[in-house]
Image (tube, rainbow, N blue to C red; front, side, top):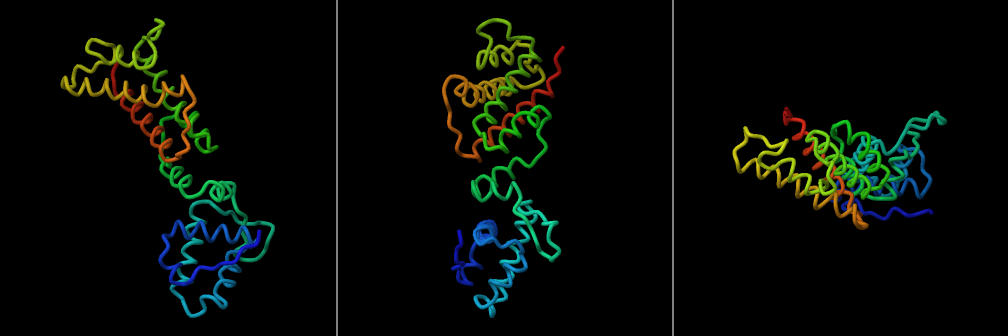
Length: 231
């Protein structure tokens, strides 16, 4: 689909860099332009010939695109600036800025279990599965470290209460009483809100940012769990 670039120079300057990057990459894709230098020269003549500030902003947009792995160099071309839109770039064009921002939000080292389970699902766009897998891992590790979970009712929020309540296997005596209760409530609330509903009914996590935050919350819970010394 061929499109026309209609942004005035003042609009180019005013746009946030990520929004401008999306528009630039989409225009290059729609017009089958596989060379960023060619794209810039085309836009400079005649539209922005007397606006070096706008051309500078467009050049920054290409730098932003490259730094995020949205394009890859086209080894089949000898010309400087030849590129291919990467797999990540195609998904970016399909899912938009919210998806990319959520992916970048998760651009941290997760605990190994979540690297194996939640991150791959998230990158595929299976946000509900990623969120469920992350919280499921919390439940699995609480069960393993506490030695509970053999009774039929020792699942989900009930498991969290039994594990973290005073006298429970994961109760931390070194914490002040209010902190211990807060820790129990934190695990119980996270499992009840983000894991159990997915177990019982379909939960639609269309918001990539929300799903990313759930995965990060699970990461925090697992890190807190690792600090608990179990006799």
